[in-house]
Image 1 (cartoon, rainbow, N blue to C red):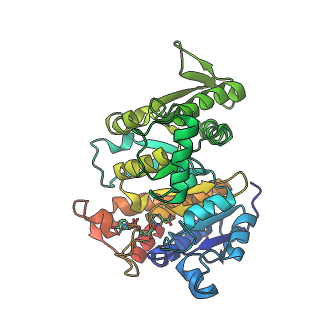
Image 2: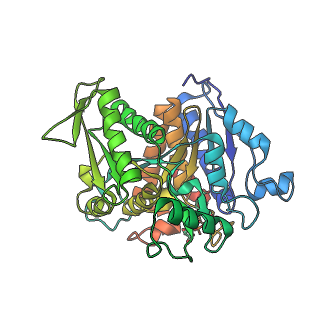
Image 3: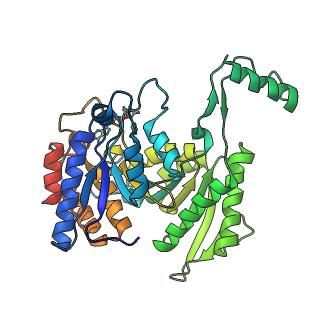
Length: 394
Ligand code: NAD
């Protein structure tokens, strides 16, 4: 990315706790950038609207205004708080709509342990992974029909009469969901994951799938992933395969490409997390794995994320709008702050990103944290969202 000294960065405040955590995130970013670069660099924030705030600004039914979409398409980097999923109406979920309209096919979730954070593991510091979740296909493509609808009935009739699927396996009362997984979709995701391992000098990339059962979707994901590693990155099978090995072109060190069945992986991340680095997986697996791993290192309150296409990256908190604590200045701003940290790194403003990590680690070590963490940490003091932000800055 070529980044000007004063990049314009669109932000969506977000609904619910968005109003609690987004101002904190901006303060922390401004403080880190100014501390490291003085007057030389500064983020120029540009508010754009989505979710409930958009309905207040643009009118009752406008959840995702065209102007917002245009800004997110135009600027290479943006950041957003959580958005309420509208009940009823034509939108299944604003986040899914954004992903589809901007073709944000990668959901990137780093999972790293910050010393002092509560964790159910004995050695949580061994968890250090980066998840590349495919974001556009799989069951999330939204191709489904409720049981009893003419559409579901038509599909059932077609499958029985044209494809020979038996009645026993397919009762009339079935709801139908279709799970598309394409070669293109798989390849662009796995390519990004391998490139990340190269750029960040990671020793392995693991394809997580359920290909033993879903052979032509998840099994194909695994096969296409390995094939791509061989064709584009020169990886070769070793010890009889299917695992592969390639050289990192930047450092000459080995990168291992491996795969594991999703259910076994959920055990492995608890039993030997140190065996895994970069993870490339399908949409639904990635959803489960991201939350499970987040819980190992302090919960969704401090788990950051980003959604990316080949052109743009939108950094976002991984949690929802937390209506139970919204507007009370109690929510943990850590998730959005660390998403902003990823954003600065993406811009190449590494020193400012490092300053944010140092600030957040310091606040956690000082045991001055929001309630979600404090209630799980011995001797911790509960502070407000804004106070937590000030601790990070200090
Ligand atoms: P949620 O993440 O909002 O809340 C789950 C639990 O975690 C709640 O008890 C909440 O208080 C707690 N929590 C979440 N974030 C926290 C934080 N930063 N600090 C402290 N505690 C926190 O999930 P939900 O209740 O299933 O969803 C609420 C709304 O958010 C729904 O409308 C849902 O569709 C939406 N949602 C949006 C996104 C997004 O915009 N990316 C993601 C998930 C859910």
